[in-house]
Image (cartoon, rainbow, N blue to C red; front, side, top):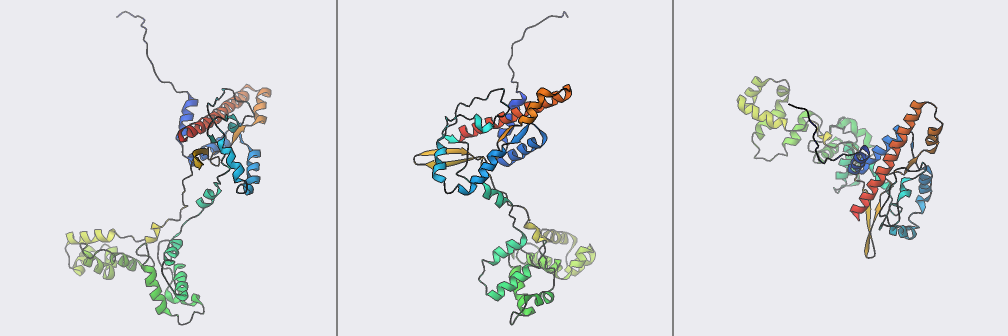
Length: 352
């Protein structure tokens, strides 16, 4: 076989790292983008936020509602045909790169996103969930006080951690209140969701749940009897004795155990003490007379710029390794600013 040279014409797609970064940022949600920017700020010395702009925004926050009409005039600013130069000046702010030729505004002064951050800090605990249901029930002041007191003694698993006798003195000077009244109030709480809440032990917890199952549930009565009378045998896996006590064979006992295992021994865990997550929009759309206006949510994308102090050090760096590192960080910072600008441009064009 003789060696030879051959010419071949073809096409292939080559994506530069900068283009890959721009595409990846475009796919991120608002919360993911915020984390991405924060990571970049932590790792790249050449990046910094526009503190002057943030201070100005904070000072004007109280005046937003009073100046809404004048701020709405900014919604007519246009951003179109954005040209992103390869060499971004050191002191360039990525918001300043926009041209005013698009029917949208990159500022969001007419929208206040702070309430989203405040709401994200809220959580709904099991206690909150029970009190919310309690407020839907018409109760006397005394009954409501008793119910709220009992709820305070329910742990995260949903169990009552103190006896009613121990809770009684805490009710204070309420007249005609005894253990019987607390027992009646506890039964009311046990009727709330999730089923099995307010139980004093595992047997009562499972019993509350199995009593809520439809009467035609297979093996309901044998399962109820085992929970009430023979839960200790089930816990110790004494199946032979359990079959004798329940009057069932091994296959039937297996079906009964499967039914019991479908119950939740920790019903309170269904209500998680996790922060409520809200969707943060990338853009706001508002109707102004006969036209729709689109503006970016600037709360999720802080304004970035090149740190001029570190950028100027490149000229004075004597060590080639340090100089190379500074240049690399500067280039990465420019790419990120450019990619963020491209993302904002794309969002505005798609939304408008």
